[in-house]
Image (cartoon, rainbow, N blue to C red):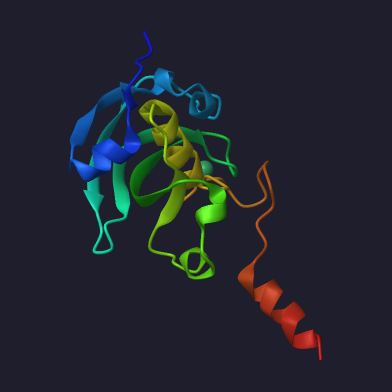
Amino acid sequence: MSQQIVIDSKDFAREGRVLEGSLDLTDFPRVADQLLAREGQLVYRLEGSVDAQRKPLLRLLVSGVLPLECQRCLERVDHELEVDSLLELINDEADLAEDDLEDDSRDFIVADKSLDVVALIEDEVILALPAVPQHEDCSLPEGGQGKAKVSPFSVLAALKKTP
Ligand SMILES: [Zn+2]
């Protein structure tokens, strides 16, 4: 059964609350679509705080193993997921100042009195998925099926030819 976890995001941050637990991969339908297997769990921890300017923050940590499909050999590759996101709660998108946008240390989400924590975790997990999952040391033999790998030397040679 999928879980529903709802918080008042600003209160959660200002009161410095902490929420932790684990969720089944099947609780994340949008992530589950990309998985080769759906057994397993993600462990999460959500911490509320305020920064020096009293801006409400949520820090989200998520870890677990996602069984993805290697885009080279099409076999299963277990991706070690490690999410550590700092999210600042803003009133609405228009609140974002120029200098906030240049701040890479945090992301911004619109504050919600009934924030769906499972959906938030799912959003962050999707952002953390590798664009092209691959085995670090993929055993696909050279010339085998799958996408041909471009040799870094041929790329270099091509670069040298261009003036
Ligand atoms: Zn592979």
